[in-house]
Length: 395
Image (cartoon, rainbow, N blue to C red; front, top):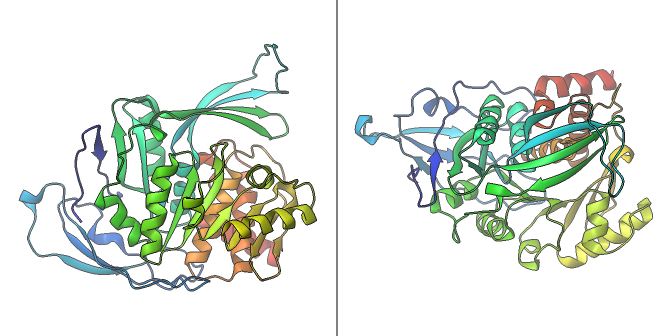
């Protein structure tokens, strides 16, 4: 697979991580060792994956990926082979989050003053990618930003989070996506999204480079802040290779296309999104059960529901639901990104071979740490912090 350095409507951002991260100990089956890619973009690598994934999915053996250098004139022709853990691939949105801190939401026709305002990196896709990176799991982000200051802000945040940006594209004809986050004093928020590059100038058919990295993933994370057509192509590519797909239901306020539902392994909505998708009430757990059954009827075998202060629950068709209470935070500063943290942390634990109960607990710990920090990407917790919290509450 040759990494492209350009495209008709944009240019490929090619960056490889500046240093090798050391995996912490949630007992992954294989330790990722990216040394053939780090610090020297002129090396070539043929990568063979061994999948540690064994829960609910029939994951077939993946094919080697050939990662060729950006400057082939300076490389040797001999490929270097390494065995690595198949990565987490996040395909999705990247936004500049414009925060305004307010005491309350404005009423219709009312103008109110904000206490403060600042711009931080976010977007559901970028949030989940940074979460994977900070949890020290090999993570690649496939997405788009504009040629502007917001795009630079997001790129730097992703790099700082340990995310590989080989498949991040910069487009010249659209601004970077952004969102207005109205943050209230109790930590709750309301968000308005402007799609920008997230929704514009994607190719009608994704490149073979992007689809190949999806087919060689350990798990794929999608959200609904990019076009459904992109998600469908990615999910189909993953399904063809036996790679599990998790779809976060957050984003576009519209029904999920049946073509996408058919190739999703885990659907992850919150209560509000579940109600919207099923046109059913979700005010109590019994109503949530009924709404999830409708999701099963739509073709989704597993539904991971985020219940806010009431915790979470994983529903697998034909099995009893598994519930997880929240791990209380000493103080809730900002809930922005908490759902993304939960979904990404659950996915990391799952691809590492943990039980469903362990995955829920790991995700709850990560989300508890997330809400204690302002901002989405800045609040993504480090792996050692999550493990420390779990050890603390266990003791």
